Amino acid sequence: MKDFISLHDHSPEEIQALLELAIKLKAEQKAGIPHPILKGKTLGMIFTKSSTRTRVSFEVGMVQLGGYPMFLSSNDIQLGRGETIYDTAKVLERFLDGIMIRTFAHQDVLDLAEHADIPVINALTDLLHPCQVLADLLTIYEHKHTLKGLKLAYIGDGNNMANSLMFGCGKMGLDCAIGAPANYSCDAEVVAQAKEDFAKSGANLLLTTDPVEAIKNADVVYTDTWVSMGMEAEKAERQKLFMPYQVNKELMANAKEDAIFLHCLPAYRGYEVTADVIDGKQSVIFDEAENRLHAQKAVMATLMG
Image (cartoon, rainbow, N blue to C red; front, side, top):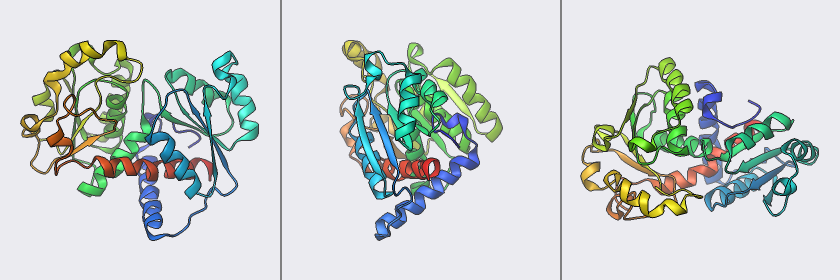
């Protein structure tokens, strides 16, 4: 495992190994047992998209692993001023032991990984968000004690979260139902790749415009903001269009009684989810947020250790 860019790139066994390592590191951290696996190592963290959870979890995780996290905004590096990705990759590999990047264009991450001889971690692009889904799988396993055979329903925009959840479910044997409006469905190429994963695991993939059909008998219910970063101009239109896809008590009643609710955050109560759901007893969003730390530590330790 050289890089961590898409869950589609990795075998179920590799993803399972990351989850098991995350569980181990989490238990050690809770017990106060040091694990300086990356002592003396430096992670460069490139942000052209800002984030609360990504920056804090990667910085804290790197420190807990004994390494040094270096924050690099678009104002700090020449990548945003015309330097090629090739040149940036070749320079950074001489200084760093790994690169984490959170950006807009997925191709930038692919190019960075192609040219850098050090590990590259995709911390989010407009296409995929694999670190979040690894944390989601960890959270589901902690609460359901299994992954294979469960059903996850994603309701809302067919965005980077929906894309990566399809990969995660397909690889690990969860049935997945995506309920999204017709013109806001998942990326066609991602769907084609995900179908390969579902065929291998034997799990089922459902793509529908009906949120009730998607959520029926789900063990896990997931949603995300309707207005992702960079889409602010579409806010009013999107809020009106997506209101029938709001996760509320009425919609949740179609899921299993013991279903858990997930949201990658930030959340906008009253829009993609109502307060009584996200703050209710089925919600495990803060366990999920914490697990970004442990899942990403597993990725860093595996790639850079």
